[in-house]
Image 1 (cartoon, rainbow, N blue to C red):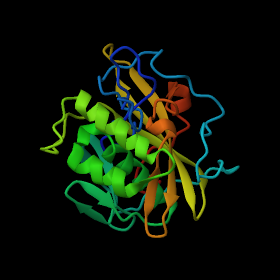
Image 2: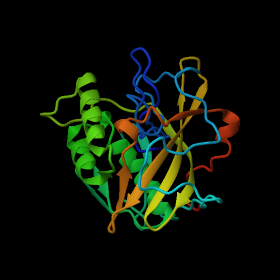
Image 3: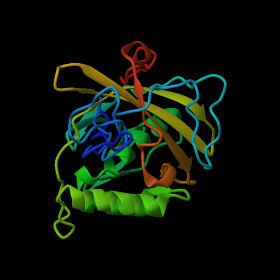
Image 4: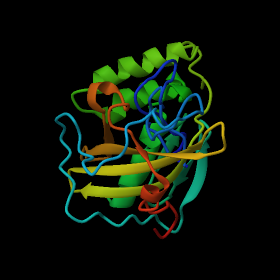
Length: 254
């Protein structure tokens, strides 16, 4: 799923990592949320390897991971919708409670709501969804010291992809899917959601990536905390199949 996932890690010769984020959904590179790769190709050197330390490299309002991860449980009413080629979960009870003109908002103040916010906001801040979606999402649902820089980065990547700001329409899809999720930190004020995404390279090999997505509770909804320097490439990591097995899959009742 990963909504339409997103963006990936460390640009290398004409390679834009989508996510989002990105994301079993697609998100990484142009680097974007969720470890999705815009060029649908991933090699062993495209991303740094995952390590035990997955903390942020810059200050943010999100707390350090708690000793015990929070169990991820999506409501039984979870269904799926496709955004920029990525299947994203939707729940009438956990969110997004409002979906208008491609935008997603209204995520409940629970771990499940945080997971749903993470995948939707990650995908909706990728250039692939088009300026009609990413501009208001970045303006109204992204916070933190790097929020303004993130807007500049996404707009620049949108132009690189040939996007037309005047039309506001999508510019392609994310070739990845959301494969799993973990919540290492959750408080009333903030949360961190680690999203596992998968894409298949030219040889047919599944490639996994993990993206730590930080969220802040605004008092009314979850907001995405912009990644360091407004880019996901510094925080997305490559994940081996053995490491990927430690991420519970996203499914109702999980």
